[in-house]
Length: 458
Ligand SMILES: [Zn+2]
Ligand SMILES: [Zn+2]
View 1 (spheres, rainbow, N blue to C red):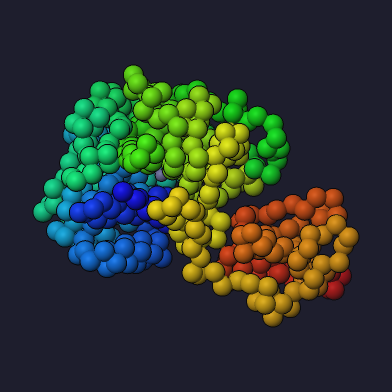
View 2: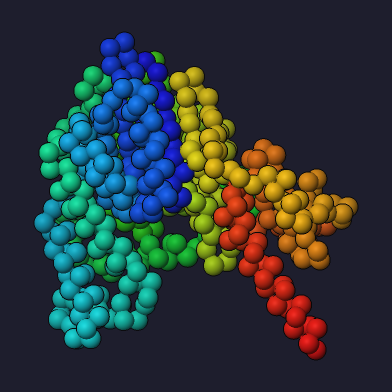
């Protein structure tokens, strides 16, 4: 009973198309749909459409919204708009009224701020925070919008069977009992989403998430020969992973003794709260790295239990203000590497990654348009410094150079001023498309031109 997995490059977000087959049945499943961005949703719709056509289906057999953060749910809204009642089934959670009330209070505080009306006691903290901190306001917007997205998705699926899956409900796919929900448990879910009140969500989690986002470390700073697993945390909750992420739906599929694990944005306690977690998650054949490889979502213990053969991580590789990669985090990648897990990243110039029926990993890169020819046509010349990597290109005297990485069929940007010692990679990790080139290289050239003009004036 082969399984085929396609993890679409949706930046920092998730979208996986899964094809399951046995003697009688074929099922097409979409786990999450990626963020709100036309390019991203077009790609998801196109690849889903292709999978359905190839298997003579009108609509997906199952869509799963692991949790309703925007980077997971937005694309599902596009899918629901397109396929509507042709979708056979949907697995998602609907937060209780309590959470809805929290969102209402956030909205209220926001509009009070917008109209400068002052505040009520219950919105005082939020009002003050929003007034003082733009980032906090952004985070508030994110929560409000995600909640509204969840309501939108539900109303678009009014004719579709929606199941709220928990461990206790033994939710599995019809015809494929081995494709089943292994997290969260109802008790865990209730503890996070029902019992935690606005206070907790508003004050601690939001702030903690912002703090944790501000701390990152470059994967280039680290020597993989050293053990990094000890750098991983033992708790996601204490490190500010949000309740919505913690209650992500986690799905496991088993065939011929092999385990496949789809983890959404679940965190450490999401896994370890199960009494038999060491058994359930032991030795997986394939998994998705939770939460786009965030630093706080796996522990040393968990990575050892997973002992995964292959892992996909869906992330954009964005960096913080210090230039350090946030997701996937160096410690997470390093710890998986310590367990001989082969980790593949969507950000590495792919349209999507495929794990095929024979457990082969295939990079799909239809939209790659940058090659050595393109660079030479644009006036780049081969580098001359002794220690410059082979296939290094520079333009005039500019200190930025490009290096062609054959393994990724893409360029990396190097800083030529340090190339004779150690080439320094500059963001983004790879230059894949002409758009990447424009975004990164053109501002550099423009900046240098300006400096040239100023120097001549003097
Ligand atoms: Zn996410
Ligand atoms: Zn999330």
